[in-house]
Image (cartoon, rainbow, N blue to C red; front, side, top):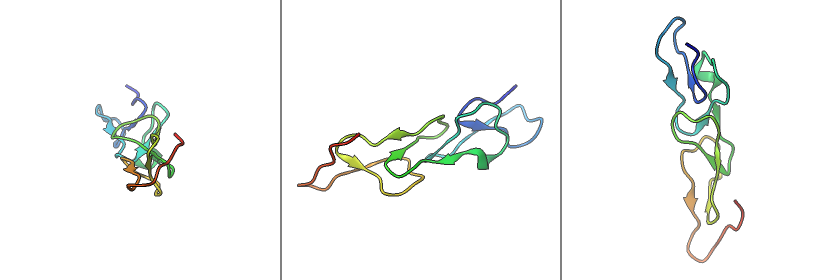
Length: 82
């Protein structure tokens, strides 16, 4: 069986697929290495085992790559873009 998006096969011939770590994504089926999991760009995030990153919502931000969540803007500030 071929591993689905967001996962990879850690050992050749394994029947189990491993999830990509939070903050990374893997858009292709059949991945065989953890290094195929790509860090999300700044301004986006991904939970464990995802095939794509999500952009931070309005009012949140993430300045670093490889994040699993976005932070709320400080009181008195805003971020209008998704």
